[in-house]
Length: 639
Ligand SMILES: *[C@@H]1O[C@H](CO)[C@@H](O)[C@H](O)[C@H]1NC(C)=O
Ligand SMILES: *[C@@H]1O[C@H](CO)[C@@H](O)[C@H](O)[C@H]1NC(C)=O
Ligand SMILES: *[C@@H]1O[C@H](CO)[C@@H](O)[C@H](O)[C@H]1NC(C)=O
Ligand SMILES: *[C@@H]1O[C@H](CO)[C@@H](O)[C@H](O)[C@H]1NC(C)=O
Ligand SMILES: *[C@@H]1O[C@H](CO)[C@@H](O)[C@H](O)[C@H]1NC(C)=O
Ligand SMILES: *[C@@H]1O[C@H](CO)[C@@H](O)[C@H](O)[C@H]1NC(C)=O
Ligand SMILES: *[C@@H]1O[C@H](CO)[C@@H](O)[C@H](O)[C@H]1NC(C)=O
Image (tube, rainbow, N blue to C red; front, side, top):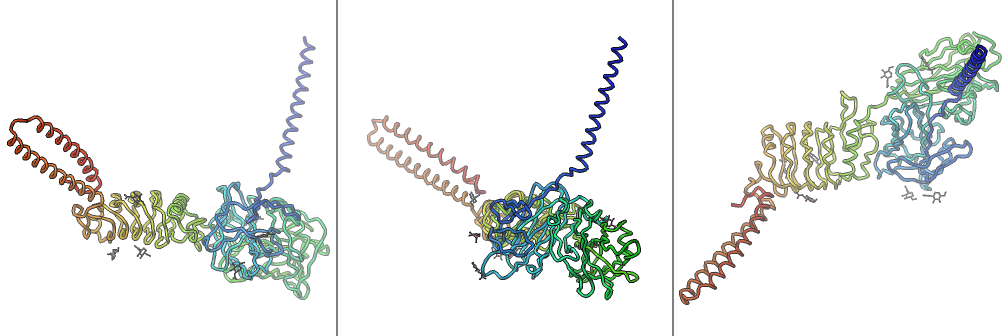
């Protein structure tokens, strides 16, 4: 017994050991997967205008066929730049398709993204002008193409870093009257959630537009993929710069390994730090100047690694960094700050630039030479608030039911970018929700041919509606009477029919009501008459038959079509009755005469009389029914 228990306890011990071992292996496995197998970032690349997916060979990149656009035409592309992806098609947006056209891409997981758009050139023999247009991302204008972009590599695209939270991204292209916007490709590349964190203002509500990305001391343009860069690096494009000024600097490079380059959150390529520009004895300062848009904030990222083996320790290369003359960093000692030779150092600073140039100066101390490996400059853009989604949906319904002409566009967000609102939609920023709302519709003389849906009342911030001079038909929706902020309602010169809804009488703010020049009929709601006392201006003239207002016929005298039919029926009924009576009277008199003449035979007279009276009853019954229908249609009652 005792032995058996001992053996069992040994067995238990072995089991426990085994379980412990298994558990330990499991935990190690978990640790391994979580630390090494970081999930791949979300990437989506679209070859605009392409009817099939495209594989570009050199970099083995997949470009999805064109989708998610709102309009435009597909067409062959001319290579606009040597750095543009080698795609053969593009999508362009002629002005006849409206001034604003978009790509609305869904199924984009929540995250931080680098969104890059390459511009295109339509392949047409006589095309000489590069199109100039504006680009917005998520309703915020991020870029206006600059004339001459085809001759500057790094102006062949626009790129912005943006936090996306609602599962989609909207990219819009806005005509500025300088050619048709043409788009070659769209890339949506996920980057680290904290990439380019620059301080407390960073994050949602802020976008960083790439203004410049320079790799110093080389002559060849490189993408992240050429550097064999980290997948979370966002395939950045680095413009080459061999020299800031030929007389005063020289390039320097190394083949050595660089420590701490490929690090979270920005995952820079190691090779970026293997080349640099270094100052010379004749001019120890290094200065780089670029053109910028004035009165904006710029986030500047400077990259260093001590790759000169003659600098052997701390204190041998010390310099100040000035941005537009102000010291941004004092006493920068690369070895000291990065901790070693051949070790990456990244410094960032956000500054406001009032002028049109940005100058970064490296000022060495005590006969040293300055050194720099790379420069990144981002424009800090405050994201615009968008329009209340509910109101956007209503406008989209209106676009459909009113048959809005294509040239008006109505794509993207109605109110933003503020430089390109939808024409005909007037916007106001609602302070309580911090969203844009629609407070006016100015679609007069726009060749609208549809009808006005009841949904219009969900635009409940409207103060004025002008749809004058179109061909809108059907009834005036009674729901208009629930837009209590409405002050101006001009539906004149359309084809509205039916009667004026009673509900309009509830609009106590209404000052101008123009319903003239339509096919309206019936009684004008009495409550509107009361509004006239408050110096409101109403016009009901030139309609099919309105009544019951000063200046209009009184409702009894002026008859609607239904009432006229009723009267016609009434009159014929009376005539028929009169006729029948005279026939009766004549027959009766005739019979009496005959009776007086013959006096003896009575039976045939009685028979004929029964017949006649039944015929009259049937006629009366039919006419009575018609008269009632007529009375319901019009205000006129038959007496
Ligand atoms: C585009 O180019 C292809 C040949 O590459 C040609 O067959 C096609 O007709 C072109 N399309 C247009 C619209 O010019
Ligand atoms: C350019 O050529 C196209 C046809 O290829 C023609 O429709 C267009 O009018 C021409 N434009 C100009 C400015 O000559
Ligand atoms: C950028 O600089 C700020 C301080 O100026 C610092 O807090 C931040 O960590 C830096 N960002 C990165 C990614 O190094
Ligand atoms: C720039 O940043 C400052 C705060 O540092 C802010 O007050 C200002 O509005 C910003 N300017 C622009 C144009 O975004
Ligand atoms: C509405 O538009 C028409 C045509 O443009 C204009 O004549 C009219 O004055 C406008 N109505 C109001 C109330 O402003
Ligand atoms: C108004 O016009 C439409 C045709 O546009 C017609 O179907 C409808 O019956 C008319 N309504 C009235 C009340 O006359
Ligand atoms: C009302 O509309 C008619 C045209 O339908 C116009 O002739 C008249 O001047 C308008 N009245 C006022 C007061 O605007």
